[in-house]
Length: 330
Ligand SMILES: NC(=O)c1ccc[n+]([C@@H]2O[C@H](COP(=O)([O-])OP(=O)(O)OC[C@H]3O[C@@H](n4cnc5c(N)ncnc54)[C@H](OP(=O)(O)O)[C@@H]3O)[C@@H](O)[C@H]2O)c1
Image 1 (cartoon, rainbow, N blue to C red):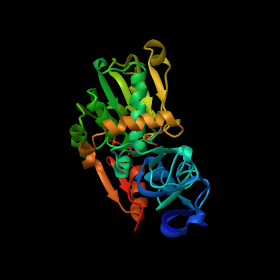
Image 2: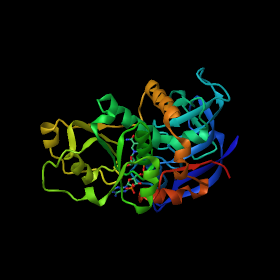
Image 3: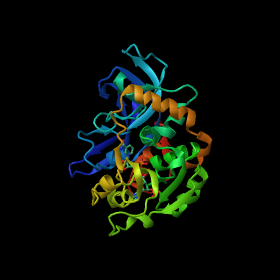
Image 4: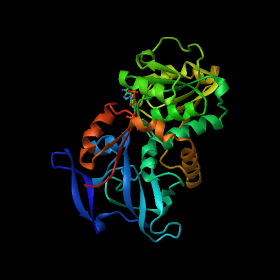
């Protein structure tokens, strides 16, 4: 079977070239399940894979796309049969092995999650890795004692995929959400998603000299990392926690041990890639019930497969609002 794919190649000068090509099914990696990809998403990591950044892609030619949803064409695993609807996020698909920017994908059965009832494959990719990660982080904070009575939750990088979905999900549960953004154009959209207040990125960017600031945040969903994380830790309330998801603002910060030993602050690492099946399924079931597709619709853009490289550049510059989805076809 022939299929279309956005192929990422490296030329002899080391430059990355992306082009839509027709390939033969025999090019696909090994795996028990052949999937017809109906929808895929664009994430920060996809931006890196499509532009050769972050050292994520080891072998070229490559097909990127770290998340996709579609229907099973053929299966040699008894958990899935032809026609089943499935979701894939994580497991380094789209980085180490070929991913979702193609009409076909072949993956291991262990990597898949059945599409929840009452969710379309398009809806699944509006949520995508971003929404899955946002919910993982919220669940982690709640498992560690966060309740809405405890006060404000800060969401950083709130205009992006993870941040906007975290804002909406927290607001829907009745938390008081402070959405931090660096862009004017995202502010109203975040208020419409249910944010209670908007904080301009510049307010938390400057490193302060004090080792602790007044206690303010009952919880933090942090997509930015970098120096801002060091600042945020100084204002986390006694015994509360920060879910560290991303590094849109950098990987390093000047850390002090003081918030941890004076205020018993917790820093929770969030990884969406290696989550075991049972937990994955639970998070997707939760999202099926709580993700308000209609409310989130203004933040969804559909783009063509051939245009993804352009949007990859934009996501790395922090210029994408909400979620970008693609139907891998001509
Ligand atoms: N741990 C995991 O498993 C996991 C899973 C998914 C994503 N991630 C990571 O989480 C982060 C967010 O992912 P995403 O898909 O939501 O990406 P995204 O859509 O690009 O969102 C990132 C947001 O961060 C803000 N930002 C960008 N550059 C910044 C800078 N230099 N300083 C401060 N803020 C900046 C922007 O929001 P505003 O303009 O609103 O400020 C931007 O929209 C990425 O670092 C990604 O790699 C991790």
